[in-house]
Image (cartoon, rainbow, N blue to C red; front, side):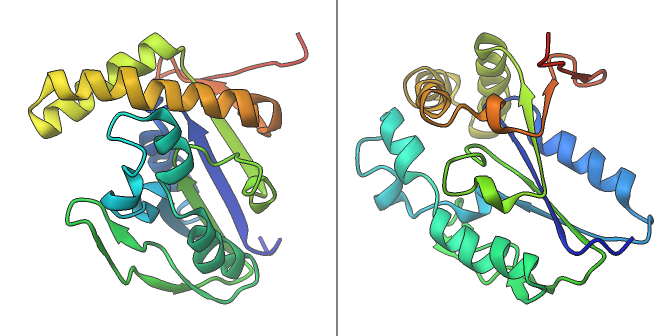
Amino acid sequence: MSAGPIRVGVDGRDGAGKTTFANHLSAALAGRDAEVYRASIDDWQQPANYRYRQGRYSPEGYYLDGFDYLSFRRELLDPFAEERRCRLAAFDVESDRPVEGASILAGPNSILLVDGVFLLRPELRDCWELSIYLYVDPPTALERGIARDSARSGDADLERRLYKERYGPGQDLYELEAAPTRHADLVIDNTRPIEPVLVDRRS
C-alpha cells in the first residue's frame, strides 16, 4: 500500500454508532502494512461560551457554533494529506480547555479515521478520500443518544431535552443544507450495528 495518506470520514446523526464503527474499522485495518490513526470531531469543539452563544438548546448553535472546523482542517486534515506534522486533538470538552493533542507525522501508508457529526459540511467535503454516512432513522438515533448520554451525565431529563431541542433539530438543519447522504461515498444502514447494510442508492 502506497497510495498516499488516506482520510476517511465516518459521519451520521448523534447516536448512529459512528465511534464504534470507526473503531472496528481501525481494528480491521491494523497490521495491513498501514499506519492507522483515529481522531474525532468531538476533540475539536469550541469553548462553551462560544458553543452556547445562541443558547444552550439552540439547534443553530449546535450546527454553526459547536465545532472549530477551521482549525480542524488547518491543523489536522490538510497537513495529514500533505504528509506534514499534525495533531489529533485540540480541545477537551470536559475541562472546557484547549489541549495539545498527540502529534503525528503522516506517511504515504497512513490512514486517518475520523468519526463525528457534520463531516460532510460544504467546507469539509473535499477533505475525504473516502466518506461514509451511517444512516439510522431519527427516532432510533435520538433514543440511542439519550440512553448513552444519560448514563454518562446521570440526568435523563436534560439529555432528552438536548436531543429533542438541540441535537436532533441541528441534524435536520445539516441534512437540509448539506445533504450528506447525497455526497457520501458510501451510505450504510446502521440500524443493527452488528449487521450494517450498504445502501444501494441506485434503487
